[in-house]
Each structure stands twice: as structure tokens, then as C-alpha cells.
Image (cartoon, rainbow, N blue to C red):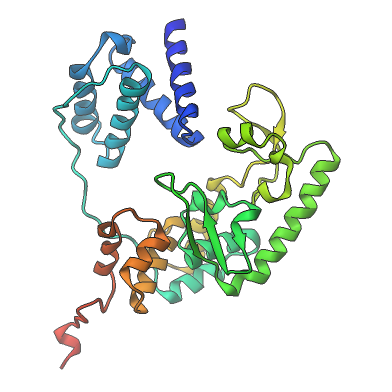
Length: 322
């Protein structure tokens, strides 16, 4: 039992050294645990390619997991063998879960307005940013004060998917509400400092480089949590103010869509899809949309051409042409 705990601690340590996010850390550790339990708690050093293949086949054939889930499990196990145990597995014979070819759910402009009408306060502001700037939910919640550039009307997305920074547009319409939000956060931060708190968690590398930055105004979250909590990655009991939890926004969006009578499966990510689709409908260049979304490959962005009513070919139904 001690050896297994030691192994997982090693996994956490290497993940942190390589600056992986806390969410990725939790996910990788969970998959490695499942892999070990599947093989009756055998140590990974005693296993190899055959055991990994058997586990992945089990996920695909018996558990019927999504292709993305199977990929996630494989990534975690490859990290274990490549980076922690330093024993690469080589070529794997894998039965892959079939990845369904699904088009993204997209709201009409009227549906977007209808959902907005059911929201208020900082949740409305968050969802407006998802739609108005094309942000992922975790990118929006992870915004720091210094990431909002009112002078140039842009937002800097730090360490987005793929660990790359990018910039996107700051919607002028929400600037007054965003300024008000920051003023509210500033007052809360000042009150926290007065009580000996006022710390926002920083990535490990920055925490070591800028020792006192965690209490500086520019590093505070734009959408902070209502409560203080300990940093699960720290070895001390200092209290921090993290950002708002994603589940808070997810619940609010589902409820708002239901009240608005939108008969689609609406999640926060749907607003990012709608951002891209509506830009495409308005004639924006696909490469520009790719950069705003932070897609590595333009083929990922091209999926939105399939959901535009009158796409690049301007196709109309023959029923509408008579």
C-alpha cells in the first residue's frame, strides 16, 4: 500500500514540475489508480504493453467509454510510463472507442438573448464573455485582473488549452459591467488583506519566481470564489481565494435555458460554439476565428462551416427557391 501511495506522489511531483494544471493532475492520478486496480493492484513496473492494452480494450468494449475518455486514460498511462517510470511502452495495439461525428450545439442569436434574459450579476457577465469572446469556461473563470486590457479592448487568455497564451476580443458592450465587477473584487480584496488573507493561488513556477505576487491586485481572479479555502497543492494551511467553481455556472446556465424555453441541450460551452458560428455567419475569416478560439489546427475550426445556415457555398433549400 505504501509503494502505491509513493508512486502516486511521484506522479503528482512530476506533473507539478512540468507545470500541468491541478485538474489534469487529479484526472491523471484517477486513471492511474483505475489502471492499477483493474490489474489487482499490481505495480506498474511489473506490467507493460499487454496490461495497458487490456485496460484500454476493457474501457472501449466493456465500459463503452467515449473515444475522448479512452484517449484521456491513455494519456495518463503514457505519462506514467514515459515521464515517471521512464520506461516507454513503444507501439500499442489498441481497440479504440469509436468517436462519434457530432456537430456542435449552436444557439440562434434570439436564443442567446433569451438565455441572457434569465441571468443576472456576475453569472450573466461570465456567460456574456463566453459568447462575446469565445472563451472556454475554465479560461473565463481563470482570468486575472491583469488579463483584461480595457485600453486595447482585448482579453489575454493565459495558458489556454495546449498551454499557449492568446488574445481575443473584449466586447465593448460589457465594459461597464466588467469595470463594476473589478471594483467589487477590489473592495473584497482590500477587506481580505485587512484580515491577513488576500492571496490568490499562482502556478507553481510563478509562485517560486514572484514570492509576494499572490497578494498583489493584478493576480486576483476576476470572478473569485465567495469563500476562502486551502490550496490542495500546498503543504501548509494558508487560506486562498480561488475563482468561482465551474459547477456554479453550469447549473445557472441549465436553469436559465430551461426557463427561456430553449429546446436544446445548453451548457456553457455552447456559447463558445455560438460565438464561432455567428462570426462565420457575419463573414469573418476562418483563420481569424481559429486564432480567437485558440485552435491549433484550422480543421477543428472548420466544423462550424457545417452548422452555418448559409455557409461559404450559400446553399439554400430548393423548397425556398421556388
